[in-house]
Length: 349
Ligand code: ASP
Image (cartoon, rainbow, N blue to C red; front, top):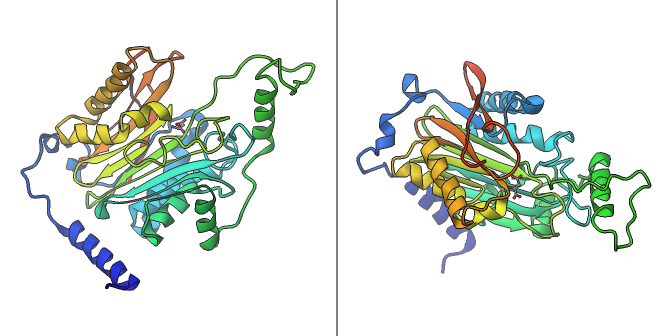
């Protein structure tokens, strides 16, 4: 029988053989479009953030610097995501994220590495600000794809991470206000001047996708998830194929918004498979949005967004807009020439 280290070596060599197999079939139709990379096979990083909070610029500047430093686009996409994870002013990702029903911050994240078709994820992770780094460790330093809850935390501690408080004062106050305003028949009373308006429960999340000059593709999704969720609820973000999917032959997609709806259609996988069949990122996203609308019999009272790029570096972000008004969602792209913010489309108002 093979011992464990034999098995590990076998797995690693299997992976590298797999990664080296060339793409044998004739080029699919999307190869013909090639709008960005044809000009110079340039690397790019795409994020679901735009001008709001200047996040697009901040994320991509850090991501690009991390990429340039090591030449590894996995560092680029995670370096980008870390900016939001570590910043307490963003209340939808990492440190400062809004907590669950019990006032505890629980984070979800996933990463994918195109060249090896490998993946890692954590769900309901507490006490660690940079969930994306732990997802990457699960991918690179374990034989598993996903760890959740205490197991994910123990794994992070084993790798030298330290437990930290993720609940900022601002997030605690927002949570308490939500709790005290939930019902007038429980024992939690709001302040006398308390605001009885029910808040729309916040979603947020960030996707960062990258393609390097070899055409290899990488991705990360990270979030504190739906605010005030039931403890232990895991959204789409750490589910491979839902909140993130990367196929090195085709492209990548990440999702934000109501995770339950994205999970039920394997949203990011669907977008990538649509691109494999020849759709542009825009068409692929529109088709996935339509799938959600159809499955909900046309009644959509939530928002979902998909951000995608194909092997040629063509990028797009589109959304279903079940509530709220306004234009399509912003997204930003970094190349060696700098950062550009663009606006995508909405498919349902
Ligand atoms: N998709 C995330 C979730 O459902 C939340 C979000 O993107 O805002 O957990």
